[in-house]
Length: 234
Image (cartoon, rainbow, N blue to C red; front, side, top):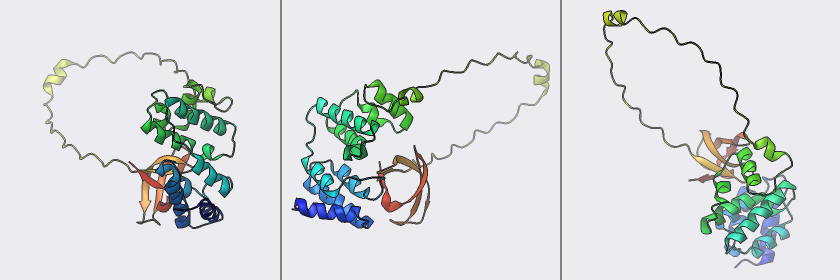
């Protein structure tokens, strides 16, 4: 069993510029001692040093150890409301970092149909619109910006071309038609998750193993990252 003080030391070392191995180990230790979903705790550790901000090590550990899994749909709503509020107000809290990830995992245990679209949506603009529809906090003006634009007016109809002369069609030889062979369907694109950029689709890969360079298309844009900084998702 790892004590609280030992966890604080591990997290502080990771936040202070620790190696990727130290960061992931800190996340795994949090997963062992806290009641957070294991994947959330491990992703939190993998993100140490990758985010624009992080609370103090003791605050991270105390939050993780104090986390109580939701037992009712209303508890899940509380996670959604708190995450959305912290994100809207740009509060530098742990829930602002991992709230959506946490919500996705807890919805697998306690289904809340109204909130499920949040877990299924990867497009940032659509996610904001969904939050607004559910009555969750969103940045001022974000809901209007995310709303679908009105469809453009239909183009004017163009007069149809005159029908072809059937006598010409009869004089022309019938072309030979060969049914093309069906090409094998391409394998599904791999998807990866990053603590900061969310989930994205692999577009290119250079090299193998943890040091391989992966070009991944996220909602925030296309990024090239080392494989050790992302997690493959199904």
